[in-house]
Length: 148
Image (cartoon, one colour):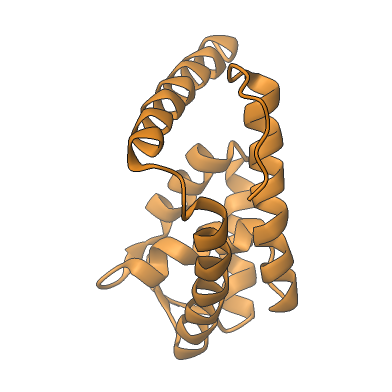
């Protein structure tokens, strides 16, 4: 494990960590022909016990990724066209192919995540989670104020 001198967290260190982890995820996704936004949309449908309301899925994608509604709806359509999701009226469900792909990706990313996160002490993870949640809340409040 590589260690570096501890420095206070700031926007740059947060961004560098985000982009490094996202690059790992996108490497896995690319091997399976899936994009980042597609994975973000596929995940909640794969984890749901039943159908997912399409409008809610699109709204959650908009909120999570800060994309516009057309982009979120387009991603849902891409997954339907690819046969990974299917639509029933206003609901979407995962297909067998979608579930199989999601499980393969989860297995691969889980192994990478274990190598990245595995030996970080639980107390550090709890503190980091608390701080990142606060940063997210504050950044969302800034975005809301900017759009007024």
